Image (cartoon, rainbow over all chains, first blue to last red; front, top):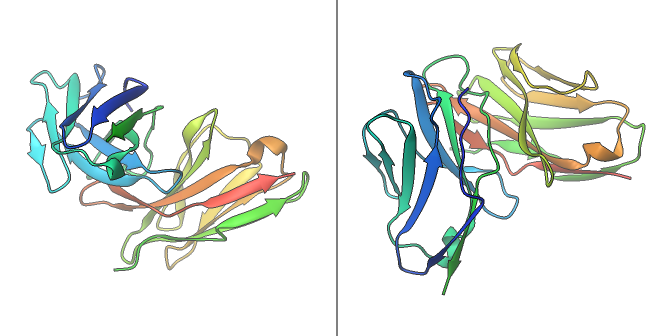
Length: 113
Length: 112
C-alpha cells in the first residue's frame, strides 16, 4: 500500500472551513484515497473516499489533485465536535486487500471557539 | 443495523498470561481485520480474515494469533503477555463493495 504524509497538527476556528492536506505521491492507479477520523480513542470513523474525482457527502468534501499525488479533506463548517485525529490512507477497494490498511500518524485537528 | 461489537471493552492481565478478544462484525460482512493502537506506534495492522481464512498478516510476533468462525465472528489471542502489549485493540469489518472499514469501540488491554 502507498504511504501517506500528513501534517501532525492543525487548528481551525469554529464555523470556518478546515482543510486537511495529505500527500500520497506513490499511489498506484487502482488505489483509492480514504479518510477516517478518530475521536478520543473511540474506533475510527469513515468519512469519505475517492479515486480521482472530487467527492462530497454530508460530512465533508474530498479534493484529489489531477496527478492523484495529493488530496485535501474539507470540513466546510467545523464545529468543536470535529476535534479529532484525521487519517488519510490509500487502499484497494473492491478486492481482497481492503481490510489491510496502513494508517499513518494522522493530523490532530483542534477546532477552537 | 448493528455495528461492530467487541468484547470485553476493558481488561487487566498480568505478564505471562494470555488473553482472548472477540469481535462480531456487521451482519453480512465477511472480512474482519484487527489493529493494535498504542500511543507510541499509532494504529498498526495485525491481521485480516475472510471466510475463515487469514489472508493478510501484519508484522507482529507469533504470540498474536486469530481465527474466524463460520458466522464471521472473529477472535484474537495474545499469549505470554508482555507489558508492551498494553494497547487498544480495534476490530473492523469491511464493506467489500466500497472498501469502507467499520470499526468497533475496541478492547483496552492493560498488562501489569
